[in-house]
Length: 173
Image 1 (tube, rainbow, N blue to C red):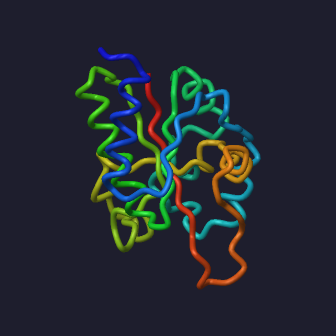
Image 2 (spheres, rainbow, N blue to C red; image 1 turned 30 degrees about the horizontal axis):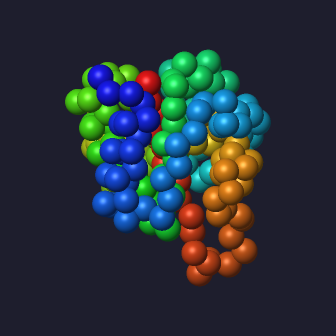
Image 3 (cartoon, one colour; image 1 turned 90 degrees about the horizontal axis):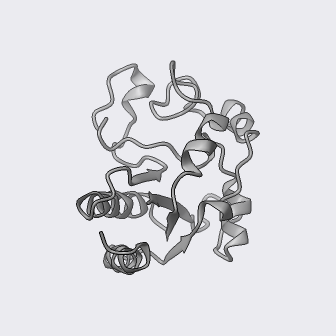
């Protein structure tokens, strides 16, 4: 298997082919974890209790359970786009590329944009279970602190018509 640096150059190129605005390689030590993110999920997310990839799902790991697992990776590729679906699709393709490059445990993470309406909201089975992944905040990552620390744009939106910034990540060995 090629070195992580050689593979990272390839994955950044793949990300750029999707039109992501930024693709930034970091180590897990640069990711800020804070289990309090579950409070924002519980008391701020309309999908709480129905989301298929969130900590409210029966049998799900809680945010603080993810940190020791994610810290075992050696690198994280953070992808930034103004389109949620673009960020998610790029992360899936990179995860797949990494798998074929010999990284069997590569794992993409993104706020889900696969379906127009989440099946969880109607108590149906997920239609994309092989691609459904948790969002950063649902696994205990302080998204605002992490992203701002990396010098990337992210701030609370004050108006609905403001440009949104979406982030996905691929955890790599």
